[in-house]
Every structure is written in C-alpha cells, then in structure tokens.
Picture 1 (cartoon, one colour):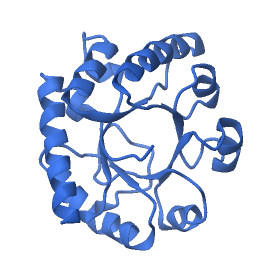
Picture 2: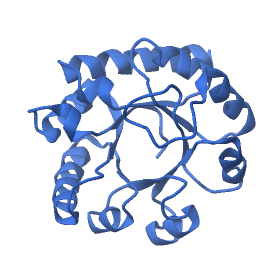
Picture 3: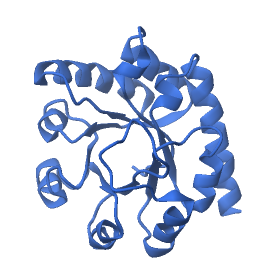
Picture 4: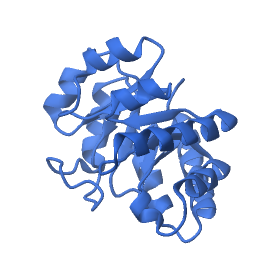
Length: 213
C-alpha cells in the first residue's frame, strides 16, 4: 500500500475538547490517506482501546492505521503498520515481528540515518523535521527544503515530510520531493479539521500532479 498524499499524525492534546475520533473522521472525510496514532503518556490499556476504535474507523474508509513506536499495540489491534524512530525498536526487528506485508516507516534525522536506510526494505522514510516545530522537540535539527531535495535525489524510497508543515508550505515540500505530507497541529488544532484537511489534500494532490507532469 503506497504512502502518498495527506498523512495525519494524531495529538489528543491539540484536539482540545473534541474527541480524537471526531477529528480523525473529519480528516478522513477531508481526504487523509494515512493516519498515525501517536501516544506518549497514556497507559497501554488506553492505547490499545483507542487503537482498536481507530482501526475500525479507518477500515471503513480503506485507510491504513500506523502505530507510532509501539509494536505490541500494533500487533494486538492488527494495525496496518508501525512507525519507528532511530531510538525505537530496530527496523529489522520490527519487520520480523510485523511481517512482510506491514507498512513500516522509519524516521531519518541525519544524513547517516538516510545512508543506513538505503538498503533497508522500509516502506517510507519520515523526513523529520522539515521545519522546527513544537510537536517535535527531540530531533537533531531541521532538514529544510534543501535537505529534503537532497534525500529525494539520493533514494527512491517514498518520503513522508513532517515538521512545521501546513497549507502555506505543503506545495513547496512536495515539489522538493515529498510523496506525502504529515501534519499534526495543522489538523488537530484547526478550528475546522474537515476544511483544513480538504484544503491540504487539494494542495498536496495538485503539487504531486505538477511534479509528475
């Protein structure tokens, strides 16, 4: 299942008083093509219950559910895949546990990360972060559009760009080489998540068409 288009990464805190499922459904109605459930400060039971609800919701839309970091949660709810960072479970172990059909994404935060990933059978690279952002504070600096373009020239792997991306710069990121644009606050904190998702999906789709023309 190729990763392309609008990729939502969840943040319950940014959703305010709105239930997470309500925001995710709005994103799906607006054109999101992938959803990553990211939870850092909840119990395993809560994570599993939430992941199970989202798995059912996303299945109705034919959209893959990716679990951030937690292989145990991904396996238990039969998620479509998992996203791992450089300090999480090694890719090889994740692939062995998840199987050949799972979607596995890997964050790359340095050029050394990119070089190591070249020979891995990952489904996409999460280029993180493109721009500085308060939702990602544990990284080694930002790539910028030039860094994104450099990675695009180096690898044929699909690239998911994340970090400070929104309607004002999503087109530029796609034209620099991103196949998918991952957003957090641009949807979760938006006054109207449906409109925000629809606008972003349109921008990304137009930019992808422009790049392939």
